[in-house]
Image (cartoon, rainbow, N blue to C red; front, side):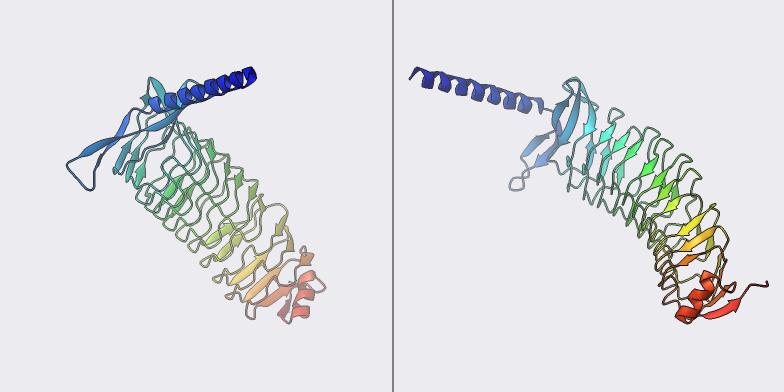
Length: 350
């Protein structure tokens, strides 16, 4: 009996402690973030409260506010502590048109504003980190102006932001993650910093308005399908970076390809579906042409291939109509033309 009494006493203490902690958290959330009208009785108004939690004992993470107001003005501090983080899913699916962030906010966590379809404006000048899908699905977000503090961008951060028309990536960002700006249909101009090392897979896929971004010499890799479906791109340069498959696939207005890299392997599907290509000159710094790399380039009428190319995959030029392949005799391109029934022109003596 005594042991049972002791156990009950311990359980009671645990429950009391837990209740006190919960009450303490609730007591923190006392600042008003908006005034709401009762739908049944519009004359009755109630205040809604910011929801937040302590980060490392010295700052706050804002976790939400059940408000229907059109403008959210995020406070710089609450309970004498600075607000430094907008928490994961804090405002997911809500409908503010404008969000005012104080300079104290340096982190926006994953999905913080995902699917805020009414959001049109937010200042990001003080933000150093933007998490995964933070603004994904914010269809009417017209501006994404980053401050120099930004050094980390999460995957799909601005995917589906259909109204953004221009971005400038700050110097501290060395990598753009996968799907970072995919399906941003109005995006016309993208400016990259000189120190950019990586453009991730699908980063700008289906950005149908994007025009000829300048690729910095610092680039080490461009992920697969990074610019797929960018119908307004007209030029592409194969420089010193490694290229994933399908980087410029279905870029329907692409007319000019340059090959400035020292040793180039044309990857699979790299230019498949680029229907505006009419002539193609593969120079001596190219060593191989990948699977379906120019498939469905239906505008091609002449392809010049140097004998430095030693490997051409089976479907490299399939479904391209009837282009002439011009190449030296006994080269890989000559053998390819004979094997697959292409018109052939001997360039051995030219």
